[in-house]
Amino acid sequence: MSQKARTRFAPSPTGFLHVGGVRTALFAWLVARQGKGQFILRIEDTDKAREIAGSEKHIQDSLRWLGLQWDEGPDKSGSFGPYRQSERLHIYKEWAETLVAAGRAYADHFTVEELNSLRTQAVQQKKPFLFRNHRPNNPPAWDGKLPLRFKSNPKSYQWQDEVMGDLSAGPESVDDFIIIKSDGYPTYNFAHVIDDYLMEVSHVIRSQEFLASVPKFLNLYEALEINQPKLATLPYVLGAEGRKKLSKRDGAKDVLSYKNQGFLPEALVSFLATLGWNDGTDQEIFSVYELVEKFKLSKVQKSGAQFDETRLKWVDGYFIRQLPIEELEKQAQDFWPPGAQGVNGQYRSSVLGLVRQRLKCFAELPELTVFFFKEPEAQKILDLYTHPQDKQLVKLKYQNQDYVKLLRAGLRELDQSSFDEEDLAHRLNNLLEKLESKPAILFPVLRIAVSGSQISPELFGTLSVLGKAEVLDRLKSAIALLEK
RNA sequence: GGCCCCUUCGUCUAGCGGUUCAGGAUAUCUGGUUCUCAUCCAGAAGAUCGCGGGUUCGAAUCCCGCAGGGGUCACCA
Image (cartoon, chains in turn blue, brown):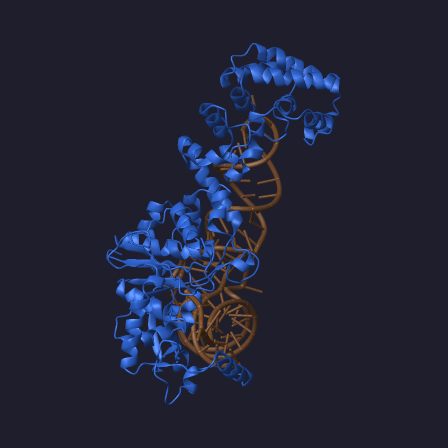
C-alpha cells in the first residue's frame, strides 16, 4: 500500500479502552503508517449521559503506552480540527440544515413512548421496525428542539469491504434514522460520516457491530453527495469463555491493566496484530516495524478470534527473552519485590539475567526473585528439609544430620571459592566426587538453604550473584537451624 | 422475527481446485540438556476442514440448501 492513507480511531469516552477496542486502533494505525499517511484520534463525545470523566485521558494513555501515536487529535493541532465532536456541533448543524433544505431530513414529532410502542408492535408482529413506515406527511418545522431524522431513499446496495469482501443488503436495511438528537448533539450515525469526510479519512476501519448500519451510511453519503471512504470491517475479539464479543461487561480487561501486570507493549501489539491477522507465512511474532511493513487489511480474518491470555504470555515471554538486558531492566523497574529498591543496579541486572527466561510478565518478578533481596524464612527452610517435594530427596529420607553433613561440606568448599561461576562449578563438581554424591542431591540441598525454595534459577549462577558473604551466611543459618 | 456476517486441531492460524487422508504456533504429555522450575532441542497426541447435496477426473477450497454461532433492527457508539 503505497497510497497515502488517513485513518482514524474514534472512541467515545465512556470508559477504559479494552483490548478489543485497541486492536481496532492498532490496525488503523498500521494502515496509516505503512501508507506514510496520518493517524487521527477523534473523540466521539456526543452522548453526555454515558460519558465518564477521565476516560479520554485513559484512552490516550493506553494508545501512548502501546506506541500508537496519533498525528492529529484533541491534544495536537491539525488542519482538520477540532477533534472532539462536542466542539464541532456547529458543523453538524450546518450539514443538517443542508439536508433539511434539500428535503432530506425532517423533524421527528414522536415522543419516546410513542416510538417504543410502535417498536413493541413491530416485535409482536415479528417484523423489523422501520421508522420510514411511519414517516409523517407534514412534519413540523425543525426548531432544534425536536430530533432530526434523515429521510432515506431505500434501495439495495452492493459494496466492497476491505476485510469482508463483497457485501450486499436489501432496501429493508435502509431506514430513516436520527441525525441530530433533541439535545442538539448529533448521533454517531451522522457525525462520523461528516467528520470522516471533512477530515479526509481514506479508510474507515471499525469493528463489526456497525456492519448492519453500512447501507444506512451509504444512503447518507449519497444524500450528502460526498464520496464514500474505503470501508474495513473488523471481526470481533471474543472473550475467552464464550463466543461473544469481548466487552467490558464480560470482563474484558483494560489495556492499562496489562501494563500494570508488566506486559511489554511490543508483545501486546504483536499478539493483538496476530489475533485475526497473519501474513500467510509461519511467522508467529512480529516487531512493530515488521507489522507496518507486512500488515494488509485483505489478510485480516473474517471470523472472530478468542482472546487467549496463555498465548499472550507466551508472546510476552518471548519478547522478554529477546530484549537486551539494559532495555529489560528499564521495563522491569516498577516490578521488583520490596527490598530491591536500595540495591545497586548491577546486582539487579544480574538477577534479571538469571530469571529472565522463566518470566512471562513482570508481575512474576517478585515471586521469582525475593530471596535475592531478603533472607528466606527459617520456617520455610525447615519445612523444605523435613518435607521435601523433590522426588530424589523424598526417596532418600534424609535426617537433619545428613543435611548438615552436606551443608558443612559445602560451606567448607565454598569458603575457598572466588565465587565466579566457573570456580563455583569447578569446586562443587569436585565436592560431588569427594562426597560421592550426585547433583540431584547436593544441589537441591544447597538450593534450599540459599533460596528457601526448591524452585529457583540454576545453582552456580544463583550463588555467584548472591555473593560469597551472603551465601556463607545463609549456609551457616541453615546448619544452625537443623542442629537445633 | 426480518436483515446481515461468520464456521479448519482446546486456542491463534496456513490453505485460495490436484505436490495436503490438512501445515505452523500455543496449550497438554514424553524424552534429552550435570539439580528443581524455565529456556532450548527432539517426539507424541490433537481437525472425518459445521452438516447435506451438487459441479468436477479431482473440493477445506466453487455452487445450492440446512444447521449452529454472532451482530443489528436506540434521541449508544
